[in-house]
Image (cartoon, rainbow, N blue to C red; front, side, top):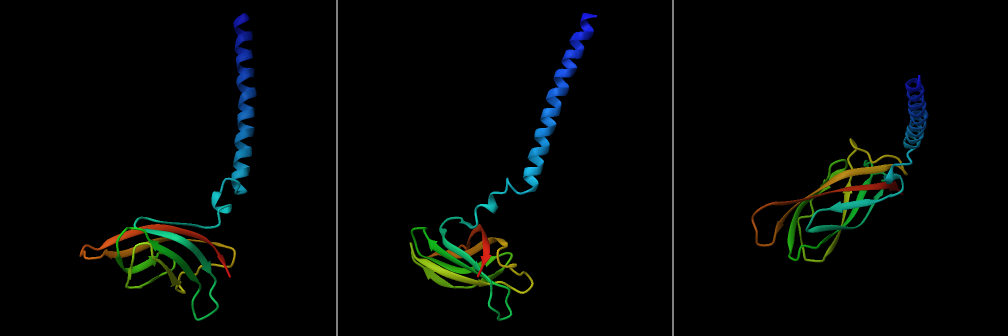
Length: 157
């Protein structure tokens, strides 16, 4: 008889905490569905590129016509300590540009990449995200090098 009461107390204990845990899981699920746990909602711009390059500034501007669906403007700097020759800069959800220029150490370059009609940036206020690939040669070298990164920005005017 005493054993039955202990079993009942244990069952009531587990049921009480079970309901509390279920309520907490439901609250967390509701908050997640509203986007409370989405850091990209609060961080409008990120640009990360592997060495020897770095993102100084970035922005996405909605196109003003010309048959394009937008332009991605990146300001990159060479921080590798030596001159490099960049043969192409491409963003996978946008397009590419072929600057074919020598970049001195510490020099900044502004690159404007026209996005193709097949992959529009989206309406003003939406997020654009793409992977950056930079093909280059180190001065005096013959081995092709590659630098990669990501860019996430809010489309603006």
